Image 1 (cartoon, rainbow, N blue to C red):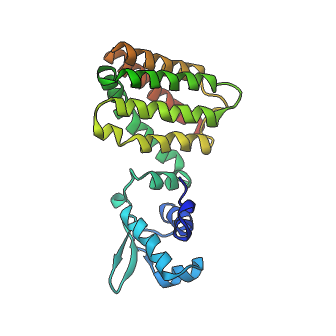
Image 2: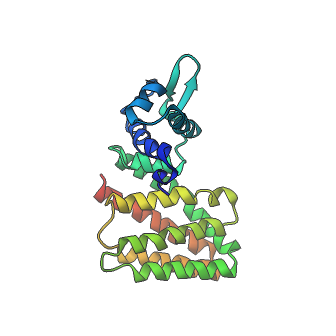
Image 3: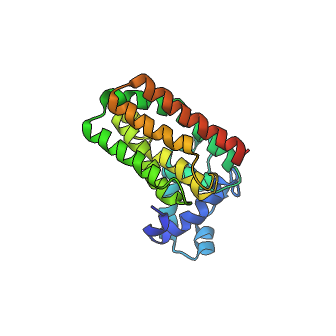
Length: 233
């Protein structure tokens, strides 16, 4: 959901957040809330609310008599979906996409193997439905429809793993997949082999074949990295 849907402070965040993550305000920069409120033409209370959200993401910290200071990048909550979205919108997009895709390649195959052991019948049916939805949108430049089912597919895998840590990464994976699509780091149509792999993962999970589910998912993430080599070197 866009922060603009949350009122004036959301509109401030839509501008200030990307500016911070893009380095327009380098770590150590001191932001004066009064000056920012004037710059954005909002009240100080709106500005303070926006700052509180940025603090919750560990992008800034407020210090008495100092102001709002941009924190070092190694202290940012890089798993926050909004921070991911902002970073993917900046010039550092290729490195960010690669970092997130490497994370996926380390975690999702294991999650798929666990899903093959723990998925309920309902989750198996949902996974198959998602895979078929991907097939249905895999031709004719239907990337938004494909993305919808792709995100849902990977959420089911993470949830069906039975591991709450994996399940909480659903929003992270969703932002990676959405970022690739919205910033055109995707082919006009998904590669047929990648689509087939998702169908095969669904079949392996339903069959309870953990080793096959894990290996097929690893092939998906390896393929995603190879696409980045071509589209976002």
